[in-house]
Length: 306
Image (cartoon, rainbow, N blue to C red; front, side, top):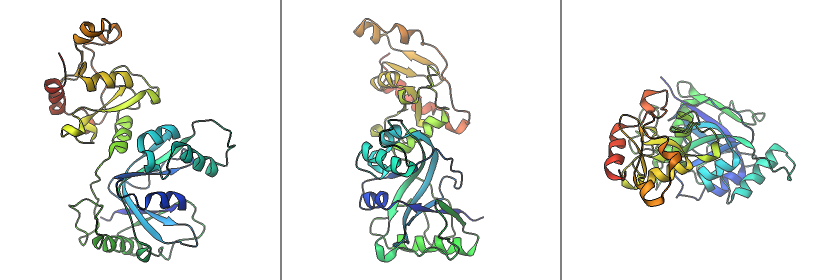
């Protein structure tokens, strides 16, 4: 069975701001409207096609996840991976495409297509668009590798990547084998989004739904060997996240919320948190996304103050 590739029309400023950023492991290919995107599944390729007169396919990335976010939270999650140098610059770009009043202070909800391991070709390697590409396309077109044009596009991308000094795709990918899904390496921003969606945008402990107040917590910190993966994450209200990282609260392997006695001893407070002690947390519907009991055991034994 073949895999899909999307060729998306790409803003020149977005492309230029990112093409020399080898330090970024993920980018947000955003849409100015809160549009849904279901053309790809994780591990398929999203490619960047520039506007005329350039017109070539100049890079791409491994699709990870798509959803909608207020533009302020998109900036908080991805920073310069949004293709701009500041939150205000990102907002100005969105305003221009939406043709909104520059004085509008709304926190615009935008579509986010999260791409891991982005790659950018040097101009001599830009790929001409397939023959079927139409000038009337203003967003994107999908190709499949079990069809001639899609396979040719896949092979052109792999050939260029094989000559790259700094390979950006998963090292396990056989660039000369049959087209296959690429296991994306999630970055911090993608981790935040997939955890947020897995928990239905609700705090696992309190049920809070105010999105700016919610954060994706690593159960085992990345610096301590934890991964940017959903089973290593909890969606928590910001204050509970801070307490979790500091070891004043934890979640047990049987998914109960526990509060350390040290909050009372050190701060002579904590009534609101103790009221939550012993509560079963909410978990994702999909079993494979639920908290890893080994990671929870690690947090209980290495972080929790008891």
